[in-house]
Length: 132
Figure 1 (cartoon, helix red, strand yellow):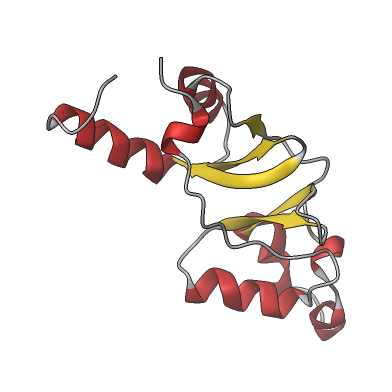
Figure 2 (cartoon, rainbow, N blue to C red):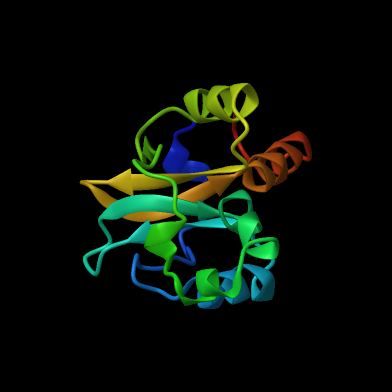
C-alpha cells in the first residue's frame, strides 16, 4: 500500500512565524500555492498558513500589514507522518476543507501533500506509470 512519502512533494515552500505577513502572501502568489507550512529553524512544524487565514487583510486596516505569519497561522497544525498510509491522507482530504497537509518524519517537515499531488498520482497510475 502506498504511503504519504510516496506521493508528497519534498521541495516545500515554508515560512517562519516571524515572517512578515505580506512577504508570506507574496510567496503564495508567486508560487501559485494556497497555503504553506510554518516551521522553526530546525524544520519543526508549528503551524500552517492558508489563503483563508489571511483573507481578512483585504478588509482590515493597514495595521495588519505590519503583522507576522504567527498572527494569522492555524495552530496546532494537522499533519501526517511520512509512513502513514496514503489512504488515510486521502480520507482526511475528502472529509475536511483542507487542500493540503504537511508531512513530517521524526518531528520535522519533510514534504506536503496537496489534492493536486493525489490527482497527479491517480493519473500516472491509471496511465500505467506506477503501482497502486
